[in-house]
Amino acid sequence: MASYEDFLAEELKRIGSLESRNTAIGESITIYHRRIKEETFVRLDGLIGTLELELIEKSLITAFAHHDFPSAMNSFYYSLLARIIRLHNTPRGTSACAAGMKDVLLALLVNNKTLLHWMSQYYLPFFEQIGGRAWYQKPYTYHHLCLMVRLALQQDWPLLAHFCREALAAPVPSKNKSYVTDYRFFMALATQDEALLQQHFAEIAKPKFFLKRQTSDFGEWSILGSYMACYPMLYFKLAQMAGYALTPPSIPWFPEALLPPTPAFIPRYEGLEFLEAFDLFKPFDDGLYPSLPYSLVPLTPRPIGQPPVTFVQVQHAIKGAETLK
Image (cartoon, rainbow, N blue to C red):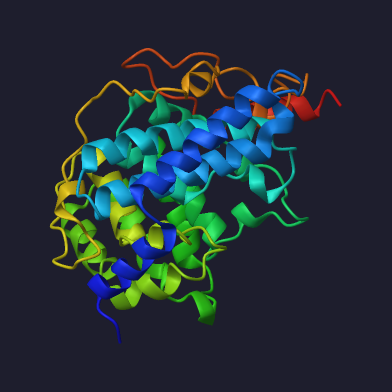
């Protein structure tokens, strides 16, 4: 079996050099400025998606080939702007609308308050039936864990504990037995049990636990999963945001440079001003604000110290809107 270092070298070779990524990003920027003169912003969704991927790849090369993690955070920041813009552009009711764990992990790594706030307020996947199934309401599924991650990001501890209790009391599907540990981790986080939090995190941080899952979760970790322990890093950062200093695992998938919170920085990327100009907090453009759940992103970030809109408040808002139909 190839070592992590050999595997990493192969992956970096596959996505190319930093120069090739810079060239690709430059070409995408040029195409954008040419097409925006004749086409609507929404019609450029495919181009914005390509740019998002190119920025992520540049970040990975910068971090893992050149060991320049601060510069990598800058590119990750702009990839998240592109991602949020795509969430505004994508037709509702499709799985592409879902901002899943990858987006939350990148926001936590970048440690930008505006992006974290946006991610904590985005509720679309948790209320719509995507593909005809209420995925996010079913315990022991990847989608239900996405909901736990979002509640942990929002730090809605009572509701997080409620969902965890329900899951831990429910029958456990044989193919997803490992999810029990995730729910125990989130329960410990919600109930502020630091000893159990560390215990369950240590289990999640074992390669045999996370490597198999990172290749099976709907392609969520198809890029990042080759470079880092995505589940452990995500959970480590959620606990860190809540004030806990978990003991990190001594494995190569857990880079020490990513462990401290990223210091605040002013993002800069020449040519990507059009991403910065997009109003992330505007209502989703469907003319139905605020009657639908995906229109409940606030217009502006909440003032410091003011709690976020809670999951229950959103549920009440949706039920109220449904009575008007």
